[in-house]
Length: 410
Image 1 (spheres, rainbow, N blue to C red):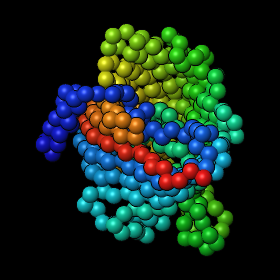
Image 2: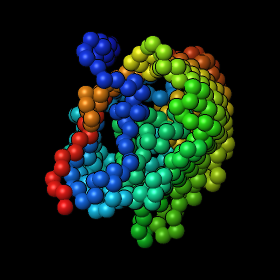
Image 3: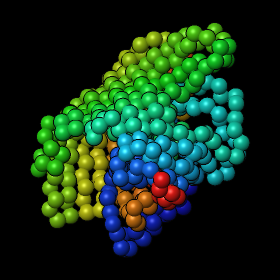
Image 4: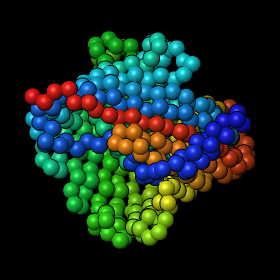
């Protein structure tokens, strides 16, 4: 495993010594997808390739989560057509491949929540159809049906969404409303994860999300102040399935706070940001999870220095369970089923480097350190044990290809 630590520094050094066009934050370069429709594209038909190649190594310590490695890629070949100046249609396929894997679960699963329909598999690739219909209702409002703009595009904080899901999660599909004006940016969506027919042997499942940012002044201001409000809710149930052992289950994660960005733009220092957020967990229906409610606090300091985006964050919680976030932000162990933690906390530091080779070709490198504080663990069979601090490391390299070729202009 030690040889893996050599790969990332070597690649990083190679990037630093070469010519650069750089935007540091990976969410804005490697993982982001632009949803704006260009009215000038009316009547255009494109063939497109959207692909992310990744190699990520997680060396985790402690009993919160086991370590693992993610070597692979996903690819979305598709056709894009603009029948009108405010409509975009996309049709193709989504394929996920882990190098060395030959069999993939047919249904989505989560690390700390019960899986469903997990006895069905696909072979060779994880394969799904891809279709998106987008309508720009105005210059500020977009409606999306089918495969929506998900993942990093929701701009959720880390306790609510694990950035690693940009590599592993299926495309989100359902309905989405996007709104962006001078004082508010809003993203509301429903991701339908498990559809049921009559007598289906599994439950219906979907996720509802809301990500808003109230902009108290212009983002380009010397000091930009904003107020984020975020909601992620998951529901499992249904009335026409044959499941008799699972009750209706509904869980929610909420987060709210305030952020200040100082646009320095002086020398190598571009921006400094401070964000304070409080998060809340609620088990609104069912008793599958060990806690009915919990909370956490998440102050984060970040800076864009030269070609790098640096982050330092603190997290402390009580009985909090992240629905889509990293298990490190939760009070439930995924390495030891049934184990929970009393008031766990951590310190996080991350560094990111992003480089653009031109439109549609982006390279990203990141490294993360998580120091979990000593904590009291509640054992599955009863009793407790004191666990010392644990230091975990992650590093990854990513290359995004998102390019289009014009086939015909009608």
